[in-house]
Every structure is written in C-alpha cells, then in structure tokens.
Image 1: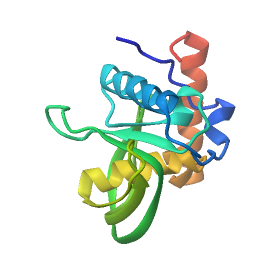
Image 2: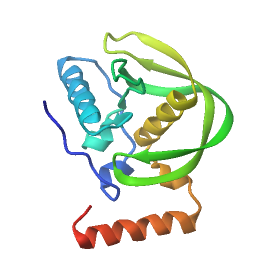
Image 3: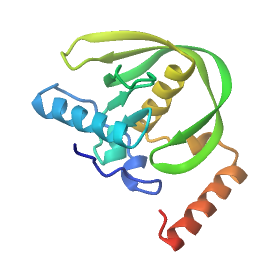
Length: 168
C-alpha cells in the first residue's frame, strides 16, 4: 500500500486554486487509487488532490462505516445547497485540530466520474459536509477560513507550538 505525503496547513499548494482535469486517463485513475489508499490509511473521510501536492480538481470521499463506498469526483461543483448548520470538522492537513463550521445540510453536486460520465449526487448531513469541505480545498479554501479571526489565530498559535516541538 502506498501512502502519499499529505501537505499540511501552511503549504502553498493548499492556497492555489486547482486546475480543471481536461482528460481522464490512466494517470488520473492511478492518482485517484493512490489518493483513496492515502485517505484510508490516514483515517480520513475525504482527500483533495491539493492535499497531496497536485493542483487538479479531484477529490475522493468515503463516509461509509465499513469504508467500502468510495466516491471519486473529478471537476466537482455545488449546483444547489440549502439549510446551513454548525458542525464539527477536522482536516488531514491540520491533524488533530477541530472546529465548528457552518455548512449546508443539503446539496446537489455535479462531477465527472472515472469513466468520463457526468454525474449528479444529492447529499445530506455528513456526506454533504465532506463534499463541501473537499471542494473548498479545490478552491484554495481551508475550513479555518470560516472561523472568527481570534479562533483561527489560536489554531495558528497551536500549529507554531507544535512545529517548535517537532510535532507538525
């Protein structure tokens, strides 16, 4: 099993808007397989390509309890959203850091699958939250961007403390 390096908060690739995937080929399919393995090994619910240093609009998600329902989204976008709710979030790029973020409860997302077919998915609750979180990564946003300044600054202080200790 391969585990790719997950870029941490502060890495410039996380602040670069991702490019559209022009063609789904063998390289893209291999990349998504590696991303899924990395996500599973890291115990994440989702992983976006920028988190492994690739600025392409690709994300992988699996919120199923047995981790057997992977969702691979190429060039995803939110087509509809409703009903915001506050909920706890974490991120593989900010290990062991969690905060409450307002997200839409119900969404409709459009994306391309690995066979090149355009798809639409209606999602709610956790799946909707994870899709929004991963699409944010593709748009160079991180969940801490939604937090009040004081809360984000406290998280950044914690990251600096961890870096000094060598825990980051």
